[in-house]
Amino acid sequence: MSAQLSPIDTAKFVAAKRACDFVENGMRVGLGTGSTAAWLVRCLGEMVEKDGLRIKGVPTSTRTAELARSVGIDVIALDEAKWLDLTIDGADEFDNELNLIKGGGGALLQEKIVATASDRMIVIADKSKHVETLGAFPLPVEVIPFGWQTTKALVEETVSALDVLGDQVSLRMDGARPYVTDEGNHILDLHLNRIGNARQLALVINQIPGVVENGLFIDICDVVVLGHGDGRVEVR
Ligand code: 5RP
Image 1 (cartoon, rainbow, N blue to C red):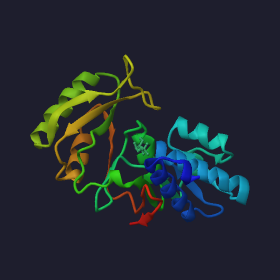
Image 2: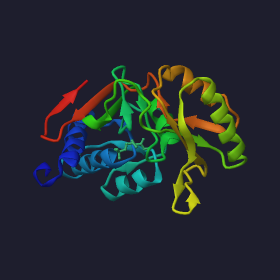
Image 3: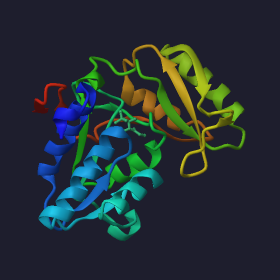
């Protein structure tokens, strides 16, 4: 399959395919969101169909739920699964400590809940996602719609005091309207300078009323499966 793909899609595909090796019969598996996670879901669907793999999949978005069902994965809700053996998801950035920025696809809240409720989280990524220090990718922060402009001002003030704020905090848009998450919330994208202390920033942002969750995943990811455009895969 990878021969017909662009280098970036090859990298995503081989990472997803390799991550499938961690999936065993009978597992409850968290299914991430995004283009890399979509490769994973398709690969798992193929294993269900061709190899008789039996898993329960807990999707992290309505998009992933639809895709998983369409490829024959038995989809259940997190509350039905209660606890997961494994979650496999993409990321927007990961550093050498395997801390992440996630939420570029707008699903950070369910992704963080599902990953946290798992024995193990595996990130699948192409090498463009690896950074020495998190922060070049705008940090997504999910906020409730009520008073979002006030919340935005509080986020700006709080983050400025930590000296990490770059040029702006922007409301994510979907055409002419604010983007709406699966939980009916909005997303603020924080354009930061480098995030020197991601743990502190994650804690401070979550203290602000109106903030539901932020896209920093600290001490959640256990393994990164890194795909390359030439088909090589590294497991870190
Ligand atoms: C969605 C996410 C995605 O995992 C992240 O944006 C990476 O997406 P892609 O695999 O398409 O690059 O966090 O909320």
